[in-house]
Length: 103
Image (tube, rainbow, N blue to C red):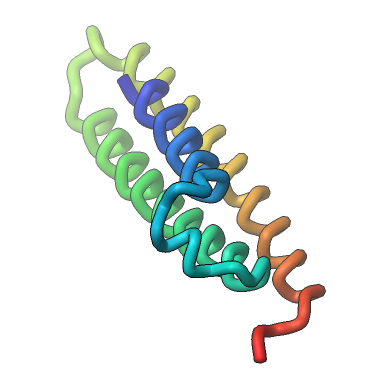
């Protein structure tokens, strides 16, 4: 379940930045602004994934032995997604810092 949510989050974030039919994207013709918006969306996704991770870890603490393996797998997947998201966010921040800010 978490794996599906994680993959869905990643696909939504990539779809958001590449969707040229979105009115918000059409208004923003400046690459800097697009990258800034993408960065903000990545941060939101990362915050949501962090919240999911905390909830799963809490379930792990309060669960019985029968569901421990599944919870550990879900936590592992979510940690990988969070790390991938952080790396992507770092790349976006580096690119933003090298670009000139909008006038």
